[in-house]
Length: 403
Image (cartoon, rainbow, N blue to C red; front, top):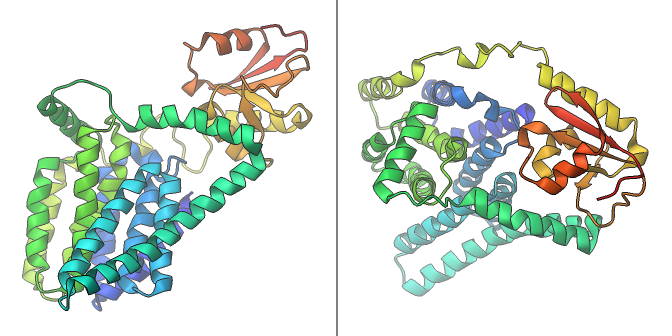
């Protein structure tokens, strides 16, 4: 994962270079990005290397937008769509930034084309069609691969499990009054990211005024701000309010805060004043600067106890591949084990009708995500011979199992 986002950052840097010839200012932007990214996300530092999707999704969104502004050829438009598609596969909520971006370019193209409404509509439709083609193609190929690999019943089972999960994880169900919910979400951003959301419109206004007259840079700014505004509205009002779900918008915000350094019209004095403002804005985040490295379980360049337990579980299961598929409760209780093993398609749900429980079978569970209220699964698990590896539980179940 670290390699992935390092490569994405490298390409983002190459693409951003098109907006400036000033290497010093570009270097300051890069420093500011990493500085703010570290201090704003220090309590969520694991998200930068964990397989949770928000960070690569944000980078892919940024890269997609930069590719669009670098080349509006057919190939560039299709590549823009492909990158947005990969972002949505990394984190499904990235479909919202994709739709927002399509709306933004439609409005901008309509304003820019001055020779007739029909020509504007034609150009907008052409661009959206090529971008959508690039977006849809990876999804079709991926879903087709899943269908071929899993078969119709397995594929249907995945969607049966996914749709309720998407609803519960993607939409909030609490009945708080709107103002109370907004206050709660703002407190979440302050506590988890040391980030004061109400100050953001002021910064957006300042940055927009600084970029006046630089059309290409201003259009990039407009695309990023549009996505942040729509995404923030969703997170504040409609989401379940988990802090890490806001990471996509936060990473885009950090890039927006660095855009003035790409401007050729701002003087050194203006940029110095702006830099001071940014540091004052982020000063609250400077508390506990070494927090990611101060936890008892953190040892630099050494695996934690849970990592060692994961490796032991992987080794145990690899020695018993003849008993595949291994059973688990739901995807979250086995996804890290699946990832670390050399073999693939090792797991299935415990209620898979194709599993013959008259034969010995193995259950593997990451107990951190165990749903103990699932009585059927708990009964099954407790009838097995259990071994514990840190936060992991392995159940070796005999052939005489009866429900």
